[in-house]
Image (tube, rainbow, N blue to C red; front, side, top):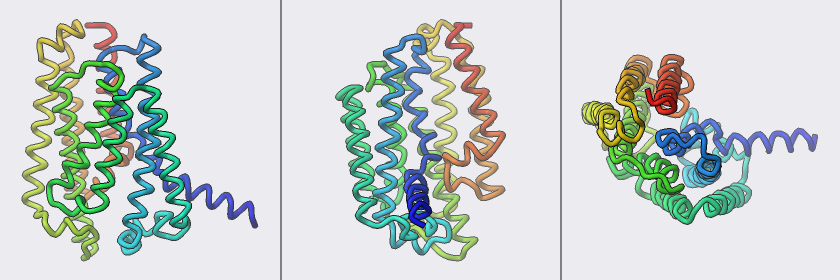
Length: 299
C-alpha cells in the first residue's frame, strides 16, 4: 500500500513539473544553432546547461503558478485534474518543490554565466508578477508570456557570449506574441463551447480584436524572419544566401497553426500543439534540418 502511495505521489510530482512544456526551452538553443557553433564543445555545453537551467526554473514557475491558481483551476474542466488543484500534492510540499527547483536552476545558470543567472531571476520575477496580478491586465498579459520566450533566446545568445541578430530577436518576439494571442483566442473558443468563462482577462478580449492581433503578429514574424535570411550581415556571417529557402517551412507552420486554431479550436497549449499536429511537426523538422544543413555547409 505504501509503495502505491509513493509511486502515485512521484507520478503527481512528475506531472506538476509539466515536462511536456520543456519543448519551449528549445528557444535557448537558437543561439548555438544560428551561430553554427555545434563543433565548439564549450559553447554546446553552456547552451545545454542553460537549457536545463531554464527547464528547472520553468518547472518551478509552473508549480508556483498552480499554487496561485489552485482555487480557480479547481473550477476548470481540465485544469482541475492538475495535481495541486486535485489535492494530490499539498501546499507545503509544492512550496518546497518550487523553491528547490529554483535553487537548482539558478545555481546551474550561475555556473554558465552571471548573465544567464540574471535572465533566470528576471524570468522568475516576471512570472510572479504575472501570477499575482498582471495576468488579468489585457494585452500586457500576452506581452509577459512573450517575454518568457525572449528571455530564453537571450539566455542562449548573450548569456553564453553569442551576438544575436536583431532581426532574429524581433522574429522570436513576434512569434511569441502570435502564440500568446492565439492561445487567448483558443480559450475564448473553449469558453464559448463550455458556456463559461475560466479566465478573468478573457472578458476584456473580443474575438475580432484577437483575430487582428494574430494577423499582425504572424505577418510580422514571417517578415522579420524573411528579412533576417536576406540580411547582408546574415549572408556574410553564414556564407550563404540560401536561408531564404527555409521561409516556406515557417509560413506553412504558421498557416497550419491558424487552421488548427479556427477549424478545430486547438491552441490552448502551444507547446503541445506543435508536437500533436503532424504537419506542424513535419514543417518544424524540415525547417530545422534545412537550416542546420545550410549553416554547416555554407551552400
